[in-house]
Structure formats: structure tokens, C-alpha cells
Amino acid sequence: MAAVLNPRSVLVTGSNRGIGFELVRQLVGKSSRPEWIFATCRDPEGPRAQELKTLAAKHQGVVIIPLNALDPSSIKAAVARVNEKLKGAGLNLLINNAGILRITTLESETPEDMAEVYQTNVTGAMLVSQAFLPLLRKASQKSPQKGMSCSKAAIVNVSSEGGSIRNMGTNTVPWCISYCCSKAALNMLTRCQSLGFAEDEILCVALHPGWVQTDMGNAAGPAPLTVEVSVQETISTLARLTEKDNGTFVSWEGKAVPW
Image 1 (cartoon, rainbow, N blue to C red):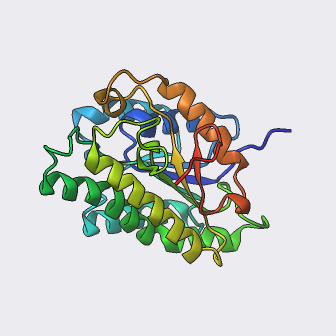
Image 2 (image 1 turned 135 degrees about the horizontal axis):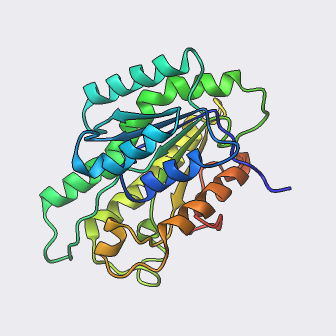
């Protein structure tokens, strides 16, 4: 029997478009859907969040929360809102999906782009994870499940094969220096989190969703993978992860990706 992803609560950052939006859409459509899906984005009132607002209006338990991963007061307010909804329960699954990409070359890369992309893709994921750690710990402590799983307590950092040092030049093209460097750093953050939170039984993984047909994916050329297939396979993969996968780098299909 196939494993089922069954967390009571999920939080997805960058959920107003692309992979983040599709994660919310598919999770809410599952028969064993989470009771709470916290969909965060920087500007819920902006035009780019309209599709998310329409989806949330149709489904109870989908809560749109403003969250700027680089603004401590915004993060604090988001944690308070989640805590209020969960009424003493913990947060089972945190998906750090928010990220940015700048198309650059070795010759054209700037310190400003490097700093901005690193801050969003690495520091943002770190700050959000730190802020929600007490709720993830609470979920782990209250769970009757043994071991680790994404249904119990987990941090999933959406990375990229672009951050794989071994695969650079084989399956990826160095057209976005800051992005690739940031994802390699995010992978290291994930590894550190997996060691730091192991005693809490919080599963931490870096996930490569594939080269997906989103605004970001298509900016680098014609992406081969639809967002629907990527997310469908990702959800199946998350359902199968256990403590043996803690601190690893996996693809949307559940295959190991080299560091």
C-alpha cells in the first residue's frame, strides 16, 4: 500500500504562484487533506495573489497569511496567526518554497544580485524555520508516530539541481550564478538543520522539484516539466520520506541528488 501524506497542518511559503500555489491546490484537493493549509506570500492583496484568494474562498482551512521572509516583524505576525488557528497544536510540515532567480553570467553578476538572491533563498528559509521551530517541536512531541515523517514534523527546503556541485555542467547550465550558489548554500543549511533538529525528530530535506514550467523555470529556457506533474510526484515523495532520508537531497521523484 502506497504511503499517504497526512499532516494535520502545512505551511507553504511563496504560495501565490508556481510550485507553491500548485502545492496548496493539490493538497486541498486530496481526500486525506490537511485540516489547515497556511498559504503565505508577500502581498496577499496584490494582483499576483488573486488566484490564491479565489482558491482559499472555496475551501475551508486554507488560510492566506502575509509573510515577508526577510522581515522579522512580518514573520512574527505570521507565527502568531498560525498559532492562533492551531489552538495549541503544532505545525506538522513547513515547506520553504519562496525563492527568486536572476539570470546572470560570471561577467555580469553583481554584489547586489548575489546578496539579494542569497538573502531570499537562504537567509529567508533560515529565519522562517527558526520562527516556526517551536510549533514544529510541539507537533513532534504530541505525535504518537515513531521515527520521522512529513506527516509528523518536517522542514522541506525547495532547492534545485542548480545547487548540485557535482552535476553542474552536466544537467545544468551556469546562467544564474547567484541562484546556483544560493541553492548550494540552502543544501548546507538543510544538512545543518537535519543534525540540529534530529533529537526533536524533525525531518529536514532539500527537494529538487525538477525544471518546472513556472515563471521562474521558463525564465531560464523552455522547462520540460509541468507544475502539475512536479507537485503530484513531490507529494508522493514527501509521503515516503522517513528518518533514513533526514538531511538528504532528493528529487521530486524521490531519487537522490548528488551534493
